[in-house]
Image (cartoon, rainbow, N blue to C red; front, side, top):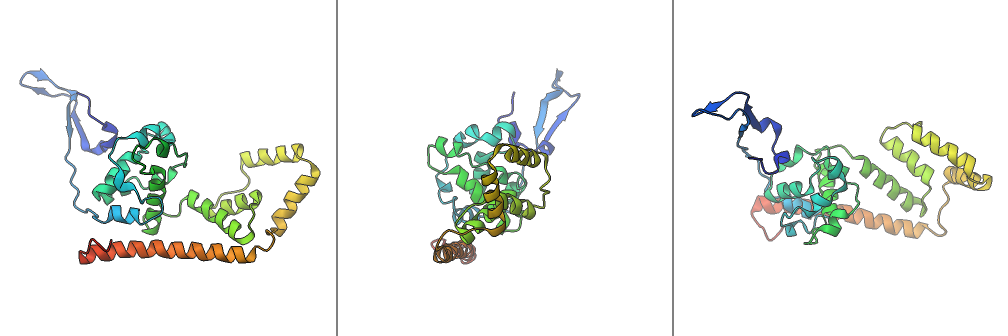
Length: 255
């Protein structure tokens, strides 16, 4: 008999006998598969509330586990271990230790939003994946992911200049993620740019890299955007603190 969603069972919890006869019946191999019981003793009852407190996770409570998100997922098609439906289940059940076992792949969401379009309950699974990745970082369970580094570099440039200069964005992203600029695809792209783009355009691109031009009268807008970013970051921190306080005092209304 096949095991339902065998991919969700940890390999170390599956036990079989190469040779086993019971009452004269040979049940060797997969016929004798035994699934070891999973014991979870360190529930985090506030886990769902913590994810809901972060941008993108607000509607996780709507999930009814239909699996549409995982079925439509671009990453899951390549790596079956990437399973949004399962992680949402773990979050809602408070199984933090189980969730942490997959902490190194949760951030791999590519934000294609196929899951969001497929979700019949408007859970916004893509947002939940981002909220979960940020939760892992804020809790210190993972180092800052490459996608977060890119978001930070992109945001910093917008706030500072009101413009996006691609070469500076790529260069700073590589610096933050400690990657070398001398990569084969990068060299090939530069060669094609040099041979295919007008000299005037190349000169302007090079000058923009050096002087970082700003949008006219950008200072006030920059200050306003930075103030909003700081306020949102502080708000998220306060929301997480409120969830923690509510759980400690037993005041569920506070959360």
